[in-house]
Length: 320
Image (cartoon, rainbow, N blue to C red; front, side, top):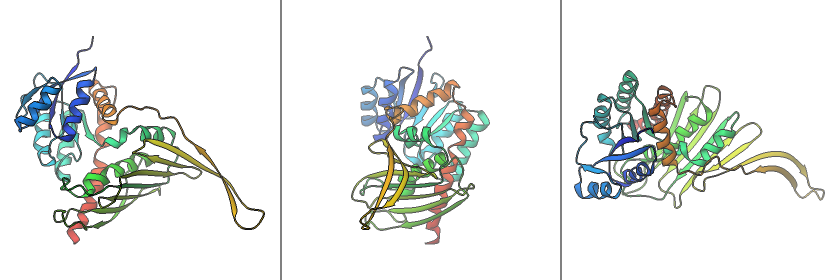
């Protein structure tokens, strides 16, 4: 019987507690250590899932991998500690608090040929996995990710929201964008200076494909929607409802009384390829990368493109 992987989790906040639950539910891993400097919070989550609480990252000698769900500003030091001890790493997005540090982390993992994954969770949404299994030649992507204002989010929408759909567009089209155009809006009086509330972005790809991505935190309802256009099909993905609808236009004719027209469209609703929670699917893939059934180098290579795009988007602030 293959022994379960012993996992250290850094961070007992909102996202960290979800990771703790998913790790503890896995039949291939166990949550061995939970790291959080706040004893009351950290110990409570650790005890709930049968782990040992420690205030800081220990030596990783008897651990198999680390999941980092700490504050972004702590990512660089934590990642370097983990990689210097030759341990696989799953780290929440963004990988680090600037592009240079992100590249350093990726380079270190590459030099040591270590598994490194980033928590770009929408990749594992059942509707996204289903749609990707059906796509043939995407030419145009339109993504909308709008939310009501959340005062606890101190960063702008580029890293909080936009990055997910940038990553999806890159993966759907299968190319790295060659052009990035963005307009940022700063509206809410409670936002910190230069924390954008709206980001409208257009990406151009070397094969001529286009992606238009809208992120906002001044919406009055939560919207998570992705439309993928091919020459003869429209694939609509509702990321909240987790469903996929495919439209194929058949014909359009004038109505006999001359007062309108009749359009015929074939609508398909495919069955989802999975109903599994995205965080569980992501962690399962992390274990597969560790075990070598998923190529570690190929997985690492998928991280940087979205980070480079967001870096270009937020560089627009420098011109303000």
